[in-house]
Image (cartoon, rainbow, N blue to C red; front, side, top):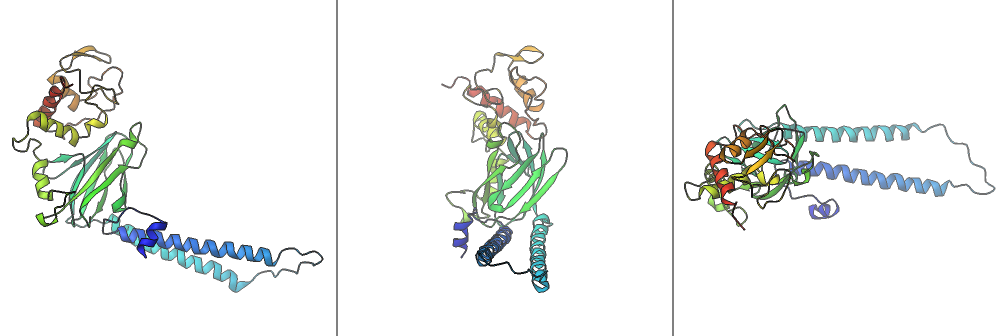
Length: 329
């Protein structure tokens, strides 16, 4: 039956504890509306045919009203509306009431990327969560209104500048699922897309799609250099991905929303209202922590500050990465 319903009103797969309730309520409203649509249109056509004007026959006097009929078509829909309200309200309360032991993750939205911060200090541009564990997101925006939406979880919440908003869910299956912004937030809104990676809790649940447990991923995420296994430049490439830098900056010399990382290190660049400034280590560090201090000519001051989010050694890694790509062909 559910397969037939999905053919008519296809949804992404369900992967949260309240996704089934959300879908069931939708299907109930959908089929209730369909039944009443067919009933009303059918009766309308029937009465049009039955009581159509016939030549030579005078219309009969219409009764003033039919009390049982009028009560029925008022009371029955009223009870249906109350039933739908109660169902929807109970589901809404469940979706807005996280368990006390929910795992908390800080979310920062900015034009045009997501940043997820964990209690351990790890940061990533994708949302990584453990399967079968309640997760609470504490969200804020650095610029305009965004809206975090995970279709597979049936979870959506606006992220408003100047205040915190929250949502929670519990994934029931491992895998990778789409996460994107559903509030138009500017030029690159359609690129504000990332993934939710639902990790298994132990080795038995590891698959080809998700090859690490949550604890294994967390250990690596806390140290982009992976304990010295990666060079500073390789670690810097990972940090750039973690913070979504490539949404606005290219690594091939092409112009995007922000200037390219390639082709300018060690050279003088034009700064709005200042003039020529050399792009060196200090310039990169200042641009990460105080991006509006020196804005490149020809670009708008849209970059958010990563002060308090990007560790000093991670900034060193980013600098090493930018240096490493200057001479690549």
